[in-house]
Structure formats: structure tokens, C-alpha cells
Length: 209
Image 1 (tube, one colour):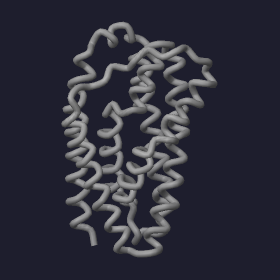
Image 2 (image 1 turned 90 degrees about the vertical axis):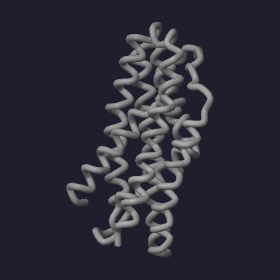
Image 3 (image 1 turned 30 degrees about the horizontal axis):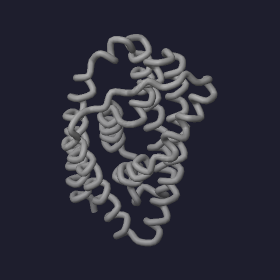
Image 4 (image 1 turned 90 degrees about the horizontal axis):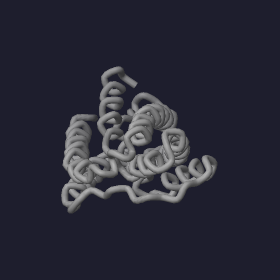
């Protein structure tokens, strides 16, 4: 992958990771109720679930490209449309959701729940099928290894980002529970990131041969 493409991928990934999605809310909830260690364990569980989606995306996108180069291009534009859709839907959400109290669990249980939370989330699967192909280049060789490498980079960055959420929530959990406005205003930032990346993806796809 060219340095410019890799840089763009990392920048886009970081922009997406700072958006509090369902996985982040799960991590924050665990951290607020059971402390920082429980939060870090939940981060590892979420990352494990993400790995399954990365592998599935690599296999699926490779199969699509092998069947039709046109289909691969369609996937890219559908990815852009999906990101914009997520942004608009988030913007239209009435309020953010404050994480509810959860029952304390053993660390092994927290880890397995994190895996299940991400593994059984169809939105995660759709996201990787939509997002990762935009940074793969058929002219550079086999698609599957490229998707896997990009996915591993995404996972490493997500562990770093999610761990920050876990540590902050575990440290300032009591204060965060009183800040309902934090969970309300985050939707505007979230929607802006999704819509911007969707537009960038569509424009980038239009200029590629």
C-alpha cells in the first residue's frame, strides 16, 4: 500500500474510533461499574470479536472481486452510502443514551460478553465490508492479505483508543454518570464524522481507475 493511502486509512480510522458507538458504550458501562481492569478486559473482548469480522470481510471482499471487478466498485460506493446513512441516522436520534447499571461479572465473563457484543453485531460486519475495501488496491495484488493487514491495523488502533475510554470511565465513572449532556451532544460529532468520511470515500472512489 502506498504511504499516502496508508496515512489516509489511519487518519480515517482514528476519526471513526473516537466516535462513541455501541462497543464503546459497553466498555464505558463496564468501566464505570467495575473499574478500569474490567474496562480493559472488555476492550480485549471487543477486539477479539472485531478480528472475526476482519477475517470475514477479507474472505467476502476477495470472493466478490474474483467474481466481478464491477461488483468490487459497487461495494466501494455502497460503503460510502452506508457511512453517510449512519451519519444521518445518528443526527436524527433524539438524544444520546446514558449507559445503564450492569450487574458485576467475573473478568472471564466480561471478556466473553465483549466478544459476543461485537461478534453478533450485524452493523460491525456491514461496516467492515463497507469501509476496508475502499483502501484495498486490486492492482497491488491479492485483496485478502491487504484487508487482513488493514484490519489488524484497525484493531491495534481500536485497542489503544478503547483503552483510553476504559481508563477514563473507570477513573471518572461517578462524574460521568451525572453528565447526561455528554451523551446527548456526542451525536453531533458522531454524525459529522460519518458523513464526512462517506463523502470522502465516494469522491476517492470516483477518481480511482
